[in-house]
Image (cartoon, rainbow, N blue to C red; front, side, top):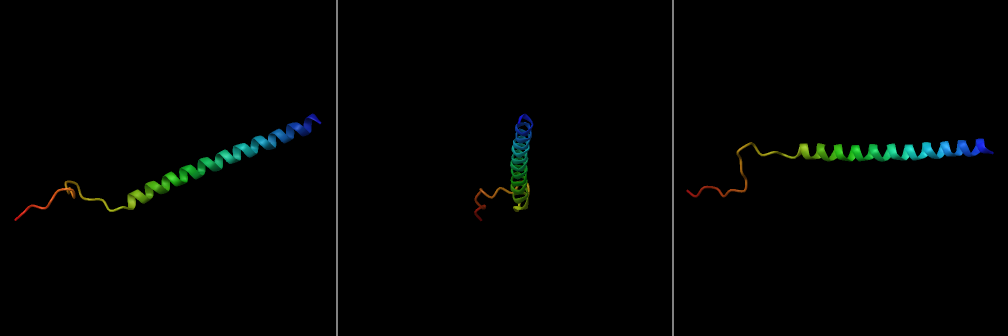
Length: 57
């Protein structure tokens, strides 16, 4: 009977580790996806301040 409980605890430990790895992988994936999406946004050239008003002629 002790062997069955030991095997069952090993299965439970493996399940918890598997869920932790899946959670970590999903977190890293979504963080990377957010960075890729941010990199795709058009960037203003340096020195181009879009908040300033255009000069009045």
